Amino acid sequence: MNKLRYTGTRLGLLLGAMIVSGAVFLSVMTTATAAPVTPETAFIPSTVVKKNNLPGGFVYLGEVIPSAQYEIRYYSENNFTGTRVDGYKAPLAIFSKTAASALKKVSEDLEQKGYILRIYDAYRPQQAVNHFVRWSQDAADLKMKPQYYPKLDKRNLFKLGFIAKKSGHSRGSTIDLTLAHKSTGKLVDMGSPYDFFGEISYYNTTLISSTQHANRKLLKDAMVKQGFKPYAKEWWHFTLIKEPYPKQYFNFKVE
Image 1 (cartoon, rainbow, N blue to C red):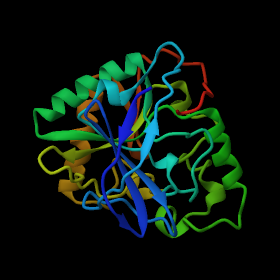
Image 2: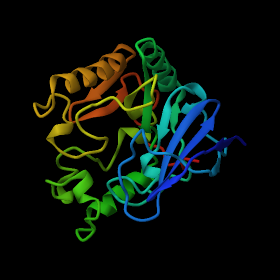
Image 3: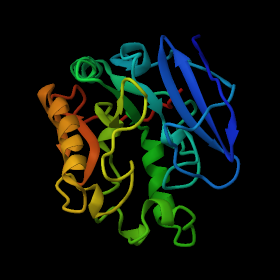
Image 4: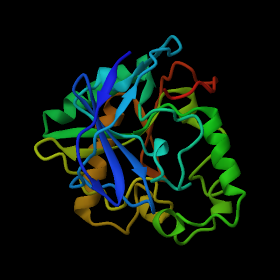
């Protein structure tokens, strides 16, 4: 059993930084209204335990890429549902071994340029996807609309391609991530936040600056170089082209 250690303080919401084999895990445990995580936000003490009972072919990303930051949004309440998502029992990133090896090369390439990865989500259980479906059908639940989908009707998020009833994440080789500056840990400006549903999150949107687009291109080029395919409607979303389980959707818990 591997323990992760948190350090920090409280600012309206509770954030945890968990360290395992050098990897930093950022998790949001909201006590009131959820708010975006910023690199400047401090963290509080807490503990989480890994079960180390993964199916064959899967690994904890924190053990493969300890230099990355891990902010597992669906373990927290700071996500578009406003609650912890079914199947996320710990703020951990799980990935297929094949995809993890490729992502490690991405990390190594980017570190040479002064950047580290921040991981928001990797493997996602099918039960979490089912949670998204139920949430989309509850027209009265709009508490996260201002932050995540201010201009959209949540019932249309599937039709618009932002979420799906069968997700590539459940196959274990799709990841949501961004970049942070290695020297400071602060996020690189991508022009829109993670999981924001709208045109500004499209990779080729005209709603961002040339600098912000260059930052997106930096991430995209590094991922494509190691065999990942981008998703045009979400700049943060990538799938390993030669994924080991292209037709299998898993449902084991993140723990």
